[in-house]
Image (cartoon, rainbow, N blue to C red; front, side):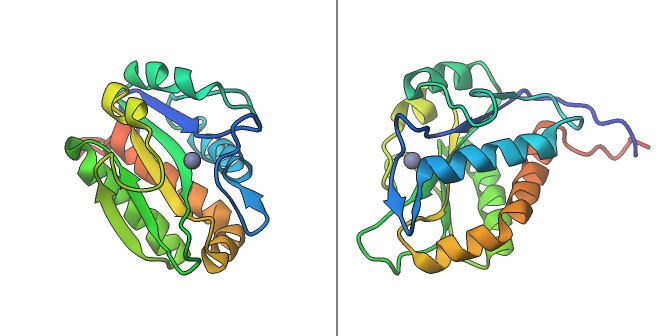
Length: 185
Ligand SMILES: [Zn+2]
């Protein structure tokens, strides 16, 4: 394997913790899901690229601090689950500024392909159940709404395939911060 040149700094954030568990559904809270996945993604990134995360294993720093850290990094991704009153709502989407839509689309495609759920695409910051304007507009970050915690099928697919989701998301993150070069050997 050739050397990878990392051109951008990376921050990964779990959007929730026990003090702010987020949406609930089908036996899980957002905190259960995003804390575990952030740590699984970190395991995939370790030794490949440098990155920062918002807390030690199983821990998440206060939400108000996340955008400040996001602002210091070129690429910042915060993990969430979507939720809706109808349990049939399904799929993955990202929320971000328009300039991050291509990166958001790549994240959506990775999760959609891995779970076999709808790709709802890259959207603006006002979409979805979250209003995390600071992380997006002040921190320059991307919110990844992995799937609908309110949908039993989305949750079951995720629980069966979460290792593969961590690997697929990590691959997109690595490509974003350390793009493969044609001159590398
Ligand atoms: Zn959330």
